[in-house]
Length: 482
Length: 133
Image (spheres, rainbow over the protein chains, first blue to last red):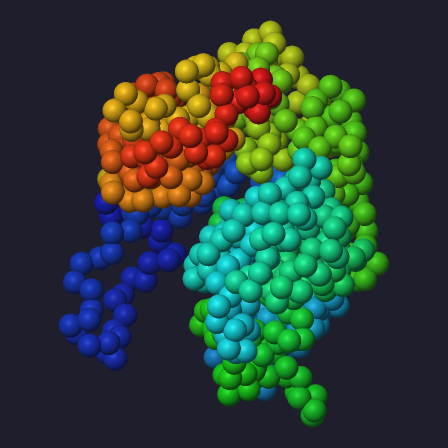
């Protein structure tokens, strides 16, 4: 039910409604509203109840285990929220002169530096407001780099077939053609195919490491060499940075550009579309092209924003101001809370939890997509045998998990694995939660055998039942009509 | 287990190929492919008169799970497309080898059945082995 449906003409939330009409003489008469805005007319209590009820319908990391693979839905420490919401940050106007924003600018400068240190890159820009914008900025820099050298024939970006769909989409948005590189059954990139694909047309390769198959790319040094020798650049999709944080660095693997989803690895609240942060880092030769604004420290110890005068080769701005400052501040506090040692623990416990779950899943008779390798921070179960024997799909499993109080893992991704669940427990879950989820999977498999209708009809316990995905895709109806 | 008619040829990218009496070649996606994709919701067909080499991407089928490219199995010119799929893409799910066909090609080579690209197409048995069923 929408708040508009609670509306009753003339009802007011008394404390919010000024009794007298304010006289704003500065606004020209012709711009003044003649009719009231069509806002819902409800009491304050109705509004409070409506939004409290909505929040109680949420499936979230605060209420449920949320093993959504490739999304790193870890716990967001409350301390990060508290500190990012200090009045000095909350009330800072984005046009405040630099000299009066030193506190905020120090945080941004240090966040840039910590990201450089954690990833092994030479410099970082915090401007991109989401992962997709970070990717766009990264590939735009690859393009700017080649054109600055007069190297205009490099029109192709290579993308392994295990990649997130955003990678080829980004390359196309930046005007490149995409060539797909196959992946071997063991999860590594097909080096022979890569060698055949590179050439004077290669602008770069976009790689996620560990890959979406949940394994580390063992030949990364060879891959870097092949791409670099062909004159291309290496792009690191930071989606799975959580698995290697504090252990090894993309910069040391030979990557030239990376985007890091601060909302994943650095634990800012996400889900439901944002706000996010896709900070981009680069190796030395790409520094001039980083998007603005960035923060620099001057010799006199003051901090200030870099402008287009300072960075004439920058790919420019991606938004009016400094990315999503609230997200950046939360990531900053999170990194300061962890410190260098804490970051190592993030990767260690994230991979330990994933490998524990993977071993347990196998012991309980589930089929792993890649059976003979250690998992990174996530792993894949394929339910193709269950689908074959009991005529239930991975989607049915996922929907039934919701009934049992678990957020579903990622389904049907990566596309290379049939009937798959991509499971990422993250480092913040206790063993009891991991075991509980595996118990639920086992229970569902038993139900698939004995009462498959439970799976087909799931979810039954949620406010919204099984959605008609075909109709949702074919008959888009996004506007509310009262 | 999916249906693999023995009179058709197949590609490793899951298209099926039928040589018609008039010398045209009809192409669709296999039963196995539609099973993997799940419920089809959109089909983007190639342009008529467009010319493709074998292996080129020529159109897209999209399901509730994924969008997938369809590749041209035989070098030639598109002479007919199955426009009914634009309104009813689900026909591919219900009749992948019949009313769910995608397009017809006029092969560039008159004796295309002698060419290497035709030789490389899989028969039903080889396709079955390929998909591991």
